[in-house]
Image 1 (cartoon, rainbow, N blue to C red):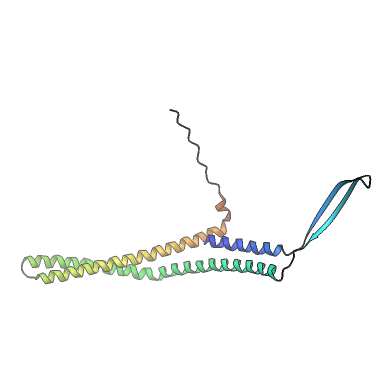
Image 2: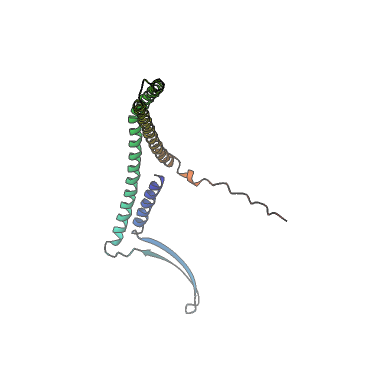
Length: 196
């Protein structure tokens, strides 16, 4: 996001530079020269005006193109900020339901494991068939898989929101402290050469 904002600022600067090139400039010159015909030194001053040459509308189009690039970079940064805000909102709305789903599945898993233990004991006493054991084990595996999926969905949503918060924080920090990027990094000290 900071890179997008920097590109927007660079494009804005390019637009202002292109626009400034369209204005005329004045240059002052002072001179001293030796003239043999006039018998000595000639002192003078000149004021020169310099105006850009216009080749059709190309110079004006260059300014407009730079302004459009600046607007495009700003809108890209705004779009990224909106997407980050939306991801945080999605997390806030879906997180409670996913946590509740995990709680329900954990309780179901606990009950299914207890039922499996009971079925195993009954199987040893010839009160349950092998099919009953396989069926209850299938239920345990299905519930474990559902619990893993629910945890994955929650963590995926959580990481997406954390990334979005990082983008928003980067945006806020970039707006408040643009000079932070210019802090000098400590230079590594030179290691003495080994003599040997």
